[in-house]
Each structure stands twice: as C-alpha cells, then as structure tokens.
Image (cartoon, rainbow, N blue to C red):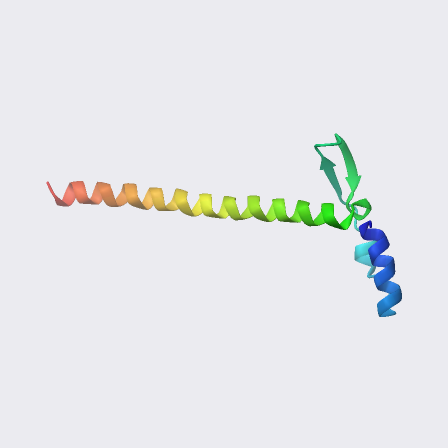
Amino acid sequence: MKLKDLLNIQQIVEKRAIPSDVLEFDSQHYSQSKDITVDILDLHLTHAIRILNNYLTVFEFRDRQEINDHLDVIKDNLDDIKEVVNK
C-alpha cells in the first residue's frame, strides 16, 4: 500500500485532517532498480522503510567514519608529541 493511501486511512481512523505540510511534501526518490524518479508519497510502505533504513545506515557510517578520522588525527598528534618528548 502506498504512503498516500495509508495517510488517507489514517485520516479516517483518527478523524483528523492530514497535516498540510505532509500533503504538500514535494520530494522524490530515485529508484536505481527501476531507473526512475518516484514521488515519496507514491512509494509503498515497505519500500519507504527500506529507503529510510538504508539512509540511516549510511548516515551512521558517515558519523562513525568522521569519528575515526578525528581519532586518527589525534593519534598522529600524540605520536608527534611522543617523538618530541622522547628526544
């Protein structure tokens, strides 16, 4: 089921309007497997979850990589200090 259909069901079940910023959400996702661009709200829920999971995994990796890069710089600085102190 597509996200826009699920939003309509949610509106009925909760008896609340769909927030306008969600309805006006104008974002697209490029599908590598289909080689097309798809509106986010036209994605099936399972695909949206997979995209989100992939995004979070990449984002987490970038954070870890950034931390490792900083740690490498700190290690290099400590090595330099050790050389000076041990002379």
